[in-house]
Length: 128
Image (cartoon, rainbow, N blue to C red; front, side, top):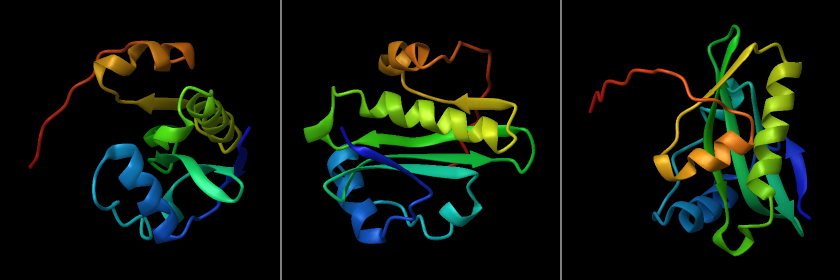
């Protein structure tokens, strides 16, 4: 089972390799200005290779937000994403967040319900 590391600050190469495989895109966003401002981020490492990741952004107060949950396709269906989300939940609570929000596509509803999230009303404006 992969080791979970809290705030590991993966290199751009590590994140890009995982991101490209997990999201089927050529490059990852530049996380270098993001991670230092996050409440937390958690990496899953198998044999020192980043195989899973989740970022916990926050508003500087009581609201935290799960972002970018991903697991390498070769490592899926092993409970890694569930462990990442549960650890992110624990750390967010420990660091003072009172609410943890997540947005997700409909096919992920069962996964996030299993992790303890409940449905809420929300709004969204597409800006670009």
